[in-house]
Image 1 (cartoon, rainbow, N blue to C red):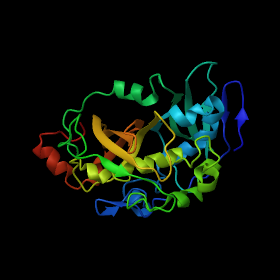
Image 2: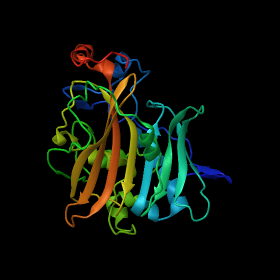
Image 3: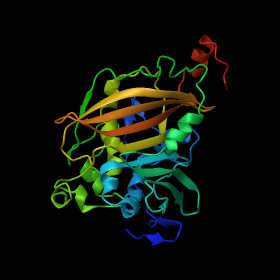
Length: 316
């Protein structure tokens, strides 16, 4: 990793994150990560999944916070602009005042187009994050359609069991393996590998930050939240918080999900789900992952019909 430092911030080199979700399917159809589907919905191309960009921050945040970043780090991001395969992205992090446990982060394309903005912090006592502040500004929606059958406090049907091994195919949502990701990850570390992990401070391979998102979404369908569809969604906001990290390759975890917020804009309905990650062997809470999955209203064929039946005025 090449880093450039000033008195205000550090940044990494320009990278070209890879698109690995072109074969992703859910609800029986291809996703927004398919070029044709993205084009039909008015986008310039199939976007790269948001947490792919998290890897570019890891060397910067290790430089700022040290080993604590891998154990109690929290990255909290609002995605601003989609990135397609071949575009270059650079990650930035402010240099905090001595003793501070939080800093601002952002990513830009080569031409300065913003990709994401957020905060990064270390625990155990995290200050208010980017998504804490964003959620506090949102008003409850009047009448949802796609999410009409969901409510805040709704939990997944049952705890889910999840594990990530090196050659394990991660399913229809993530049609690749950890080894496949490591072959093209923007910022590599020997700690991510089976052999190099033995030399890590924890004596075993750790799951890369961006792949924690994959781990927590791997079994997400088992929660069976009553979301109407088929429809196409995308990640709008995401936070990964390590409480007793890092998370390890080939180690069993238990996942519990809860809807913590519902929101809406002109184009999307948003379902904010908190996934609590427990070590399946010790039963300790080791991480929390908050995801705002926004579903495009125009992608749901029955939206107008069901909105009318619910008494909702389109555009509200």
